[in-house]
Picture 1: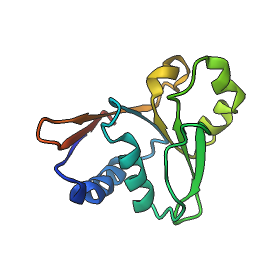
Picture 2: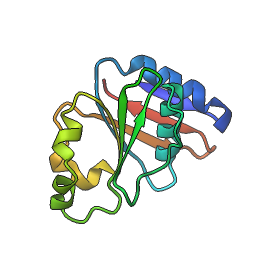
Picture 3: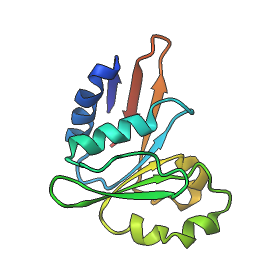
Length: 138
């Protein structure tokens, strides 16, 4: 899958397209440089799925929980501040990731050994013209 978002105005359309292609996958690991748009894209995904809570990066909390428009839980992780794998285990990582609920992860490279084998790796790359290319193998 490859989706190009040319401007902020196309963000919601890109999120809708991504949702259509998610299939039965439940764990999505978002890779990209600082400022690539990981949080912004996850926010758009959540909004398109009917989340009415404020969606922001759980940098200090590590995980935020949201309810989508169907009342289903979405887990949003940010591993940027993780320094040891034990920290991830201490938050109950396995219970979240193997719950069958949608899990959206920022900075997954910091916990790579703990990612489930079926996690979908999503890359967000900023292009010279400011557009973003979102790619994943589903």
